[in-house]
Amino acid sequence: MFAGIHGQNLSDGLSLAEFAYSFSPFVEEVWPDTVVIDVEGCGLCFGSAYELATIIAKQACAAKQAGGLESQVNVALAANPDAAIHAARRCAGITFTTAGEELTCLGPLPVSALEYSLVDIEDKRAAEIFATLKLWGVRTFKEFAELPVAGVSERLGQDGVHLQQLAAGKTDRHLKLKQAAPVFENSIELEYPIAQLEPLSFIFARLLNQICASLQTHALATNELHVRMKLENKSAHELKLNLPYAMRDQKVFLKLLLLEAETHPPTAAVVAVSINCEPVKPRVLQTGLFIPLAPEPAKLELTLARLAKLVGLENVGSPQLLDTHRPDAFGVKRFVVQEEKRKRRGKQTVNSEQREAIPNSKFQIPNFNREGSKLQIPKLESKDSKFQIPNSRIKIPHSEVEIPNSRIEIQNSTNVEVSNSKFETQNSKFEIRHSQFEIPTPKFTLGFRRFRPPLRAMVEAARGYPTEISAWGKERSVYGKVVGLAGPWRTSGEWWRSDLWARDEWDVAVEARGQRPEIRGQRSEIRGQRSEGPKLKEGGSQFGPNQILYRIYRELRSGTWFVEGIYD
Image (cartoon, rainbow, N blue to C red):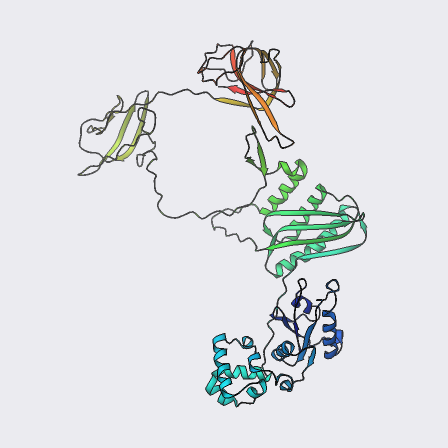
């Protein structure tokens, strides 16, 4: 026995299919406003079939809070699902049809009311059949059902026969069940409040075991867990686990959840617990036959969780630069497992701007022009043949590089000269048909070595600029008179935040007074000056053996001085 339910003017909220699930687990959603359910065996719960239809119609008029639709529905009971669907859509109220008497209810219906989509007939083909029936003078279900089956098959084909069986209410098919979306959520209300974590862990284990079993049944995993605990003081405490990859290991979930609960414990005793997860596809890992086994990612996640408990969640992860001008600003990013991208196969193309390398050689000699940039030298090709130079030697001023068994392509010539250096072989000499090249002399630039962390300093600045500095640390110390300075340079930012920053920077030359710094100041380029104290020469300065160049800064909010580093 099947029950067709048809509703009109359904409001938003509970759908008709969800409403039908409260009466039978076997539900087919034909259209959003029409469903058919299998009521076989429901008599133990709802009584006879007619009593069940009455209960369905009455419950549909109930409020949404009570599980109703706040709307009237048509209910039809029939021996097959298609007859129940037609009766529910065309007959108002409650309709009951026994087996073999379907035409008693469906006979007066017009042929155009046939739901041909139930037998998988296209619109165009159905329109042709209805036009033919109209020419024959067939107007109702009963007239169509009384036609001889052989004649219908000869003139209308198998589609016509299927429509005739549909009109007679004699189709026999199984329901196309609507599978309810799985909900991976479990909850439990406790008999008495629990204030300790150890007894609460048994509740967590029970709920997680049920969720993992449901995930296993649907071949899914999860990378996000939500835990909601109702407390004795009528408040709620929530925990959230974000996993770097999808898994469904109940033991790992329990350990991570306990660590999270220890880090963020509830403020009162727990009276109810609810756990839900977001289902995702499981992680598929293809390992190679000759690749050594790596540690399980689950163990890494547990280790990170334990570290986060010890040092804090904000101190575990990988450093990440922040989009700000704040000096030394960085954040900590959570570790995420990323799949390795497949490498493209094929020959690697060499960029024309890359330096030329001698094949089969042990060293690569870059070529420079007069300005110090790399210079492209055309390949040396031989019109006749290629020569093997077993032990060639390239001589460059103040350096010597041997290239054994190198192979180059050359033209017949007599000598090779590169900035007063010769390219010699055992048998002959060759000349590069190019201009002379020069090796640039090294250019010393100013380097800066930072102190980690910066040294807190005491600075005398009675005249508005530093005159004497004193800073002491475990590994180094800075003290002495300031004999030259440049600055200040003010930097600030993020004034709209509570942790805004602003500071003045100075470059100062300090008299050593016997201290032994790691790096002495040397001739270097210095930024322009704006102070009125002892000047550093713009463009460069020669410091004596007892003078060292530092960078110091003053925090404007606190007025504290720091030594940021030393110039190399």
